[in-house]
Picture 1 (cartoon, rainbow, N blue to C red):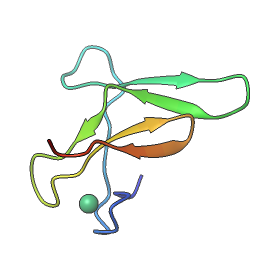
Picture 2 (cartoon, rainbow, N blue to C red; picture 1 turned 180 degrees about the vertical axis):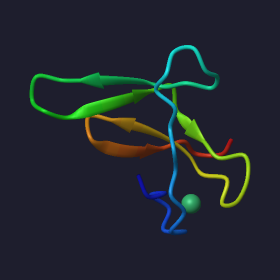
Picture 3 (cartoon, rainbow, N blue to C red; picture 1 turned 60 degrees about the horizontal axis):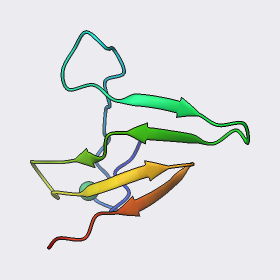
Picture 4 (cartoon, rainbow, N blue to C red; picture 1 turned 30 degrees about the vertical axis):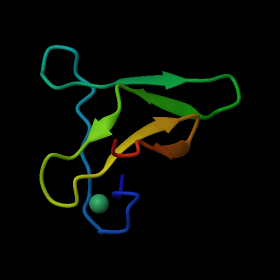
Length: 62
Ligand SMILES: [Zn+2]
């Protein structure tokens, strides 16, 4: 997926359980998907967000 902040970087989320870090992709009855845990880029734009039911929810810096 493309980074939702608009920096144009392509993000790769590993879904293989035997590699770290890995994400779990949940598919809902309505066809949307949810990623767990949140995505946090420690390099580049530093985006930190949740992808829930097909929508990006930003984590606000504290
Ligand atoms: Zn970004």
